Length: 228
Image (cartoon, rainbow, N blue to C red):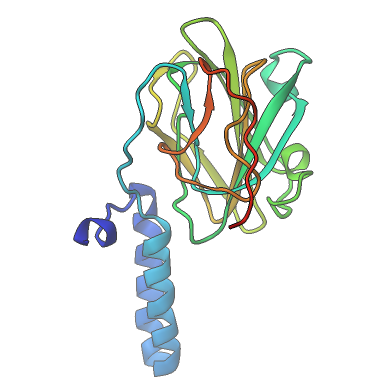
């Protein structure tokens, strides 16, 4: 049980937790009830930057979710033009992260980072479809060993003000490896290879690095889900 509560904290959160803690201490001197509010916010900030280990399936062809959250959209749309991957239409999965989700993002499948493209933009609600076109975002193209490419995009949200991406072009990566985070509240879109069907449904909760969202070697059609 301790392993589920006392999880590691991402280094990115250190200075923010310190700021919240110092502010809480100052608020105690101003008015004690405000100090306790500061304590609650400090605990939330610590919770936000938690970075637990994940158990990633390693079988060839399995693609895992790059983000914790809820599947907001499963649809078809054009690839991000900034990645220069062509004009084809691909199956897309959009995972929305609220302020209580783990915000560390993970690589969806083994490969080499072929292109990065940062796009400045707005900060509208990340749950809206137009966020993929107008919001600040970090686009990533990944080439697999068989030559096929996938794309995934970190999208800033309404209160998110920083996208952190720690990977570089030509860098080899493995499925489930950490590659960045977004604070505070955001979305990640994944564009599947041509002809690959999504194995998650709208409304489904995903766990970064663990939930299988597609099987590049499988022949299963798109899954549907019902509330039970």
